[in-house]
Length: 418
Image (cartoon, rainbow, N blue to C red):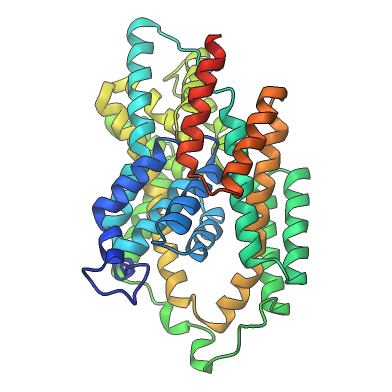
């Protein structure tokens, strides 16, 4: 069962020690709440902040846990960063830890989106904070690059095969976009890891652990979860929401189906959401849809937080709450079911070799995302200077990403006010 994966990150510590305290429910909620307040810049930015706060600063998890989480989440539907947060929470404190962690990471963005939605639909209020946010993208890209290089130094540097895999991943990710590219890179990395074994420290172990076949039996919890998720997706594909008169059931059916159909990140699903919400269901007009996506970009959270905007328009606060729960919870449930199998087989000889090949791919994806973000910015001398300063502060002086992003917002406000 997944609930068995609720061990403290440092099992050598006894209950009552510092490590046991810092991985409490309170720690998970407050840590992810703090991270959620500055989670601008996409899923790799959020993962970079988690790395710096929980691995480097608090030392409550190790970076392998984050890499494993990214590897699994990248292969499944749903928002990668939120699913990784659920994975970490589940690893530390079981199902309750996953729920508390997701609540912490989403609460800031949901709160701001509720405020913006209320103002928009009651007063037609629009806010332009482009000036305030002008330095944020550069700061976020610097944090991502710094995090990727730090992991590279620890995990990749000195191993020629891993360097080649990492470099190839960076180049391909920058030049070619698409979910299937990401999927293909992870698959190729895993195959190369198994065939070549880039980490020579991995040695064969007892044959009984090679296949992990005894772990393939599904628990009742996993069976029930997969059946429930399958019914949700079937209802979405067959447009069962058309037969519901209750708006809450409609919201649940539509957004849970979107959650389980989302491969490749939030931007990939935008056309599907527009086709459904504007064209088929006519819940929003085109301008409202665009405004909802825009609001999601100025909140410290994933683009799928825009589901709250649509839910709020249709059914107020309760509708927004149901929409945002429906779009995040199903994919997180699937993540936890799959991660249960992963954890049971992680230490097999086969899985260790596969992970040794996947690890440099994930590191390459992190580094590449920084360059992609920089390339997308409208650069000027101020933004370039802010990006370089943020990188030095992060990479050389290990300044917390929370302070760097808050600082970029402050100086952006000062510059835009001049």
